[in-house]
Image (cartoon, rainbow, N blue to C red; front, side, top):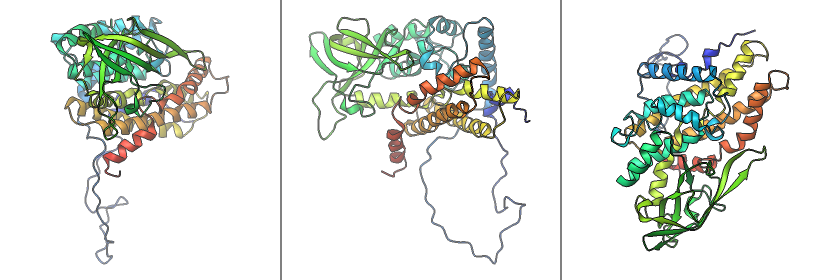
Length: 427
């Protein structure tokens, strides 16, 4: 039997290159023989394609102390019985006490400037913390959307009043947000949204329905995309705007969407002439499409796009090491994919830090990452006979339940392949 040590699946191991640089030149891979001068080399055309993912610029040594600190904290929380690792915990694990504990450690709003109550740390440092939390299956759903994309969006497009109102509360773990993009007939095609915003004295009245809004029954607010001008057939992306909406305000009704397994994560949010004051217009009227698409890079490229089932993969490795399930070479194949995605996602975090364009690399991470998450669920399911371990069976069941959403949320993989094709100049 082969031994699969648990540390094989630690995140810091994935920062180390899997092989040394063998150099370039004419040496062959076999033994350094040079090419035969009498053999005419075939002429091939060179096609230069754009780089899909930026180069990684993070030195692992600079992040190791922070990783160690997060791991020690998580070990303490586990020992205290604060949480049990779960699949898809960034969506399903709503725990406001755990969020408060992270805030006390300074791990919420890490990139928020000090003047807004934040910590002024880098995107890469935030990446390290969130990656460790996800790898541990920690319950981070309460603050996830606010910390992941509302914070950078507020910093980029928010007014001073909006920044002062929301950023300090997010940093303290006291304000939770949802996303108001998708509608019953507008999923990946956001340009077709039907929610309308009508100008009234002192603000706007919004009417329409948003769907699949994660955590709306707990959240304080969401940022909704609405149409503020009639559709222009020649430019469907024009005439869209964003608004910060109080989810407990008059004219806002939250209807639960119960999953087949009985869980309640999603909601339908019905806006019936809900009033939004001018102070809560987010960004510029008519600029909603540009704002939304820039926000999506944060939503699509993070470690939650490839670590939603990592605790299940780790459990498989542990059970193989203890010989409770038979060794399978596909474990190494999946670990290698996670390692590659770790490098890619880290590179995108670095690009966001530099304010470099990241929509195409984010799409690449999302497509490859969510596919891998599903493959892990399928791999683990082949070993579950109900006799291995109740906790393992529970993880397998949860992964099967959540799997259909992996490739849908944040934009379907089919649509994102089109984004990638455009990035390559193929369409």
